[in-house]
Amino acid sequence: MSEKQTKGLIFILITICIDCIGLGIIIPSLPSLIADATHLTIKESSKYSGIVLATYAAMQFLFSPLIGNLSDRYGRRPIILMSLLGLGLDYVFMFFAPNLAWLILGRAVSGMFGASFTTAAAYIADISTDKNRAQNFGLIGAAFGVGFIIGPAIGGIAAGFGLRVPFMVAACLSLLNFLYGLLFLKESLPVSERRAFEWKRANPIGAIKQIVHFPKYRGLFVVTFIVLLSNMAIHSVWNYYTMARYGWDEQAVGISLAVVGVCFGLVQGALSGPIVKKLGEKGAATLGLVILSVVTVGIGLIPYGWMMYIIILPYAFSGIVDPSVRSLVSSQVKNNEQGELQGIFTSLMSLAEMTGPIFMMWIFYKSVPLAEKNPVFYGSPFFVAAALAVIALILLRYVFSKIAFKANAELLDEEIDEETIENEKSPAS
Image (tube, rainbow, N blue to C red; front, side):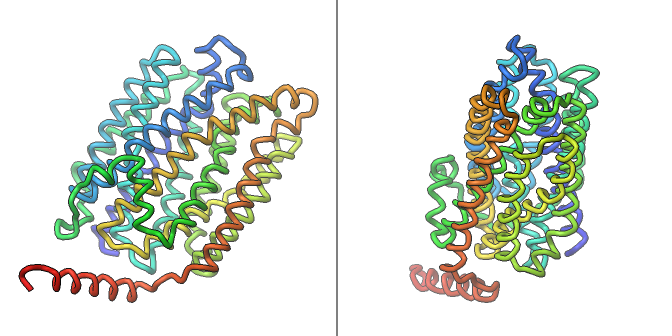
């Protein structure tokens, strides 16, 4: 990888990390924020948490295809910079948000500009080779991990100075990253490889429909969605679960999520590459799903809070599923399709984040009366997550049994053949 590509990769990983910080800072204080805004107890206000989380995801779902397709047309750099500037200004707005309605509006705008993840992933695909693609996509997970170290830590500590103080910190980070990118970020998609913008591909329904452009991999897209939906039990219920079952406060939640971030960063940044190299994308994805199935059951059964720290590291290894599947599919498509492909992945992620929190928090809310008699019922969302992971595992192995993936050389030959056919059809011929 050249020096320019290395600098670009570092910047993109920082960008993803900052986006994740913006997500993470609100998690420790979210129950208290919503309870304060609705004048209810934390358990009673849990039914509103899914709405706040889903609003962010809904806007990502709506805007990710647009962002991805714009980056295929105009390049990655201007789209990333626009998103960073918008995100930074929105965090300033959220700092002043006085009530729940304004908080939800702020999360909606954050989701719109947070769709930069699509372009960031496409940038990484642009500068990756067959040898380092899986490792580079694993670094995306590591950036998420670092973000979840910093974000919840900031949220947990800064909540003591004011529930909205972390938003100003996130605003400063986003705006500083925008300035850095404005000065140093180089474009990764050459003008010769860009394609025309089409509205039918730039809307969320159109983006999902674009899955038909990759018919062989539809099963893997479904697996990705199910895995993301399963993970929503962790992402949306963790704070309520630990507060209700173990009596944790915002600081304890923040520390635990920081540990989750450390473990995910370690696994995806340092170990996902060697694991994929040893097992291949198929083997790594299978291992990750087996771990996810077992660990989510374990989280729901744990009787003591300190035991959560024991299960965090095994859970982190489930994070190798996404980079493995994403790398496998990314290696099969052309450069000028990477933005569209990553838009599909981001749309699926946003769809899961839009429906998952509402679904998982509804299960948690409905389980509270039973859990007050038997605490094991607090873990109901995690048991559902485990069932989803098993379904994803079965589908994954079925897809792998049916699909033969092409080597890069075979894909290149196919592109050349397509160009030859198009030239023969042109009037000039």
